[in-house]
Image (tube, rainbow, N blue to C red; front, side, top):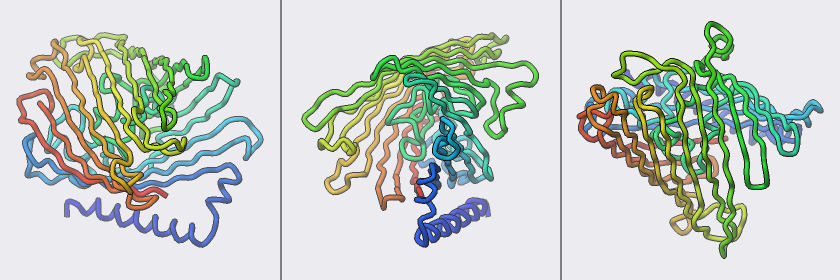
Length: 397
């Protein structure tokens, strides 16, 4: 009975997907929408994950099944209404009531399943308007996922298709707010050099519109600025693309690490990151087969945060096996060093994770991904090292 909610949700999604597929076969409704300036996408992620060794418990089965679904709409307002700009809407839902196995079986600070969002029907988590102010300046305004714009690695930024562990999705040292009302300005200083700055509601709750937390009571706003360069290194098989970034952030909310007796305002930190393709299998510019690597580092002040230093490194290879051009192998390692001021709470000085996945293309719209993680000092305590194994099914329409 404890998995009934997941089963009902899964069956509902299958029925919806079947209906959409039938409609797609009967007509060209999606092509007609695209011709008018509207692009739609629908995806479902199903994850089975189990703690097989160590951690808090290997016996409790709660949370082993989790899933989410995403509905996206992008509208070219110039083609639709004759006004400049693009409108983007993202709705997200999920199941089950439990947010994965982490709090029950593993106890990781990072979270071993970044896609486990709990039981939701459908929340509008993003709704923003993107307006080109000039050839080099773009404004983005609305409800935004800031982690999708800032420090957005090509190989470690999407729990639905890449790594599952939260430490290999985003920079754990950056306190990105939840989906929040905000503004982002992007300025292209040259063809390969950009500057980007943003302001967001620091108290956001992604399940709400954002107006209550943004404009009521005392207001706190998260500030972030990033600059980066893109590269195109020549090789016999075409350009090897990469991006190198550095960013600063400020969160004015009162904060303290877990052992502190008082709070401090104006939390500030910085990050650097890079992703770079190292080898390419052929000279087709549209083909991404080959080896790419990434690295991240983040710093946050120890008296305001439990986590002071963070870094992650990893690699991705697409098309490693002959004849499997769209399969992807990923391997990553992340490490967080806890604040010396919070040594009572965190009896170990760090937590680490090694994760490997292999994404198998079953068809153009279906991918099956075995995933394994090894957690070192989960939760920064004396909890024994843990091993989790999982399987992710991703369906896109």
